[in-house]
Image (cartoon, rainbow, N blue to C red; front, side, top):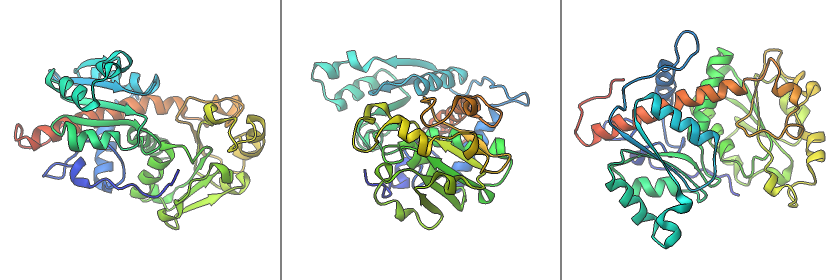
Length: 338
């Protein structure tokens, strides 16, 4: 995998007024747009840290189109849409007409004709969400729920919301370490892009050479690569551990799970090298005893379950903003006000 930036022109994601109408990647979006997503997500969490409900999408239809398996992402998108009072349809792609030879384009056009307002799309091909937003269904709000190894923008934004809420620091003050299977991770790509856009100047990527991507130097001097785990986590404010993908565990990229845990697993000794108030994150699903010990995953510094809750709030924000951006683009509303 080449980790060079894969740009998406901002006009694909933004309407003529500069407001979000699709959300397919972090890259190309401004700090102001990302901050708006975070600020909007905050409005869906009350003073007791509980999610609220809103009628913002009442009468609208959200279709979850998952061409790849997912439990956490699909479920949280469904929960987010229902909390916004939308109608939600989960399309069983494995049993759709694409399995009978119908093209993806025709399948999407038929779904659009069923009065769909938003497609939440997960696909194994990098760039699929961009293709749908630009060339297939531009008047349907397209939300990328993960495309190949390219991007997972809502995961990045829920990570940013978690960091903002838990550290209580500006992004420019933070040192953030991302550890694990960087090479195959769309989460890592999107997290790095979001951190950079929001002003983080100390981003550390930690992995063996076989799990590091090519082209990472294009992200600039604020992103540093480490092979040594202890050096990489020293004095960090945030540690993100990534899943070691079991489907690749027998490949030459990784000797064994045991060897990886010995060299790169997050344990008590390594966490102690970070700042005392360092938070520990993981996008899930976790391989306990591989990238992280159970003691740390369940410990006081872990904010992994908070990430799940924040994920619903962020996905509510993205669904609401993109729908209103589409309506504004089509001249059906004058301005966006949640």
